Image 1 (cartoon, rainbow, N blue to C red):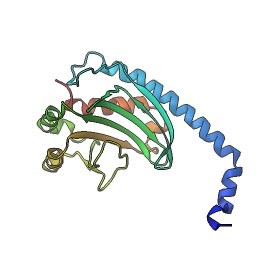
Image 2 (tube, one colour):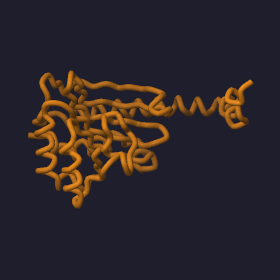
Image 3 (cartoon, rainbow, N blue to C red):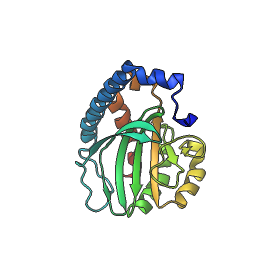
Image 4 (spheres, rainbow, N blue to C red):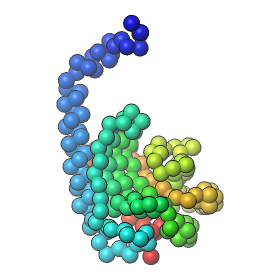
Amino acid sequence: MSHSLLFTDEETALLADAQLFRKKAAITIKIRAQLETTHDALKQELTGLSLVTPPGFDATLYQLVKGEHLEDFPYQYLDCPKHFAGLNAFTFRTLVWWGHHVTCALLLKGAGIPQYKRQFLGRFHQLAGHELELSLAPSLWEWKRGEGYTLPITHDRKAQVAAVLAERSFMKVVRCVPFSDSKIQTGQLAQVACSTFRSMLPIVTL
């Protein structure tokens, strides 16, 4: 028999650890509840905003998603607002990625991109200094952070950010928060998401 099919002692212990799976189930329920609370809070944030949005945008649309295989790790996320239609995207995602971090991300693509770029650079110093980063990935669907993946949006990096934006037909701005952050540990995911959403508004408000 191939050694690749044999369970190691560590793998056997994990398979037999019933508490591990009960703990995972309990944490999953808590994350779902926090994302539902985040949805309620973001609905309030969206009330009365004047946003630059693509055709057909509906601020009331959202989705809650749970999966097991984002690069082999479980994940849960909320999209609110959620707009993916044709070539256009205008979505704010709150992603809880097991083994990595919490990510709040503004996903933008399509007709509004030229205006979003202008507003990003024109209001750059309103955006800088809020732990935001610009994704350097070739698509909207990369969720790792750090060198080669994201560029911190700091007051001294306007020229670098402008150079990245110039080449892009889409925009993804993220804030990644470690699970060790006190707000995450104390169940304040909604506050983290809402404060991040507010810090990104200069890109998309009239």
